[in-house]
Image 1 (cartoon, rainbow, N blue to C red):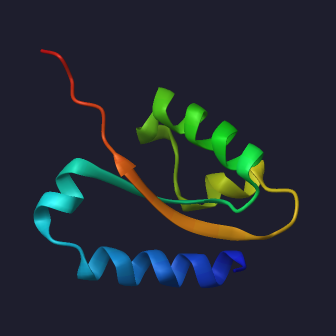
Image 2: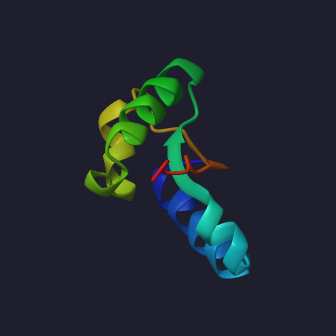
Length: 77
């Protein structure tokens, strides 16, 4: 899907998600290319607060995106 479609899909996913999903998972737009997605997620995990939806566009070479979710890392306080 293109970026605008991915943005809409993410918006709908966030509306449908329950609170435990929102607290325990990142829901992000990534490039659909596996290599580009891996690089994006690696960088995202280093500093999630510095990323926004448009950040994925810097990693994407073909304007094809997908919405993925993955478990948040727990802080070991």
